[in-house]
Amino acid sequence: MNEPAASRPSGVGGAPSLMSIGEVLAQLRADFPDVTISKLRFLEAEGLVEPQRTAAGYRKYGWDDVARLRFVLTAQRDQYLPLRVIREQLARWDTDGEVPEGSRPALVAVGPDGAVPGRGAAAVESAPVRLDRAELVARSGVDESTLGELERLGLVVSDPPGWYDGDALIIARAVAGLAAYGFQPRHLRGYRTAADREVGLFAQLVAPLVRQSDPAARARAAETARELVALSQQLHAALVRVGLRSTLGR
Image (cartoon, rainbow, N blue to C red; front, side, top):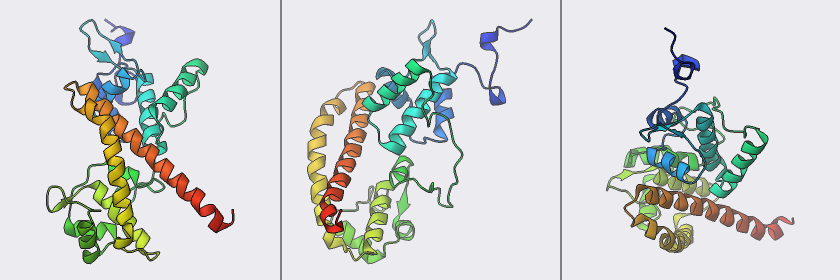
């Protein structure tokens, strides 16, 4: 007896036409290693994707849902778009039937250390990294004495002691790049001070969400923090460009 068409496998490798949230997670993890089930539930709560529900209440995703999720995650990672803008783009997708660019996976060249050429330092943040001191020195380009000075100034922190994460690698690489232009760690104290001020402001916004026991609220707190950081980066870059215009005669 032939099986019902709706339950037949479809796609490459016999992938099912409808997937559980765990199967969707497996589809996305190759390109977005930091995505979690809580993140997918949060994006659903924000109305960015609407999976079907079984009679028992389990989520079932189609390939259109996966395409939407891929677009959302790509727009956040590569373009730092806030959810409000992404929601508007998805609304145009629903109205015009035009699939947004970036919703399909793309093959890219990957360097020997796992870095993707052309992607900024934020890509390092998305992948979990755990480095010892020697590895951080080797991969960042800073020397041992410079790393010690960065730690003394509070620009790089090991957590737990003796181990460094992806943010420490980003900071150390940025310092190594600035050093090529003559910057020394002592010139960077202002960055630490400015960052601490922003942390204080942003913490006031996300702390009430973090204190809630609801996983969706915690996911919303993480998303809010990510968007605040992205907006802060855009603001800082624009202000520096404006400030340099007179020097550049533009």
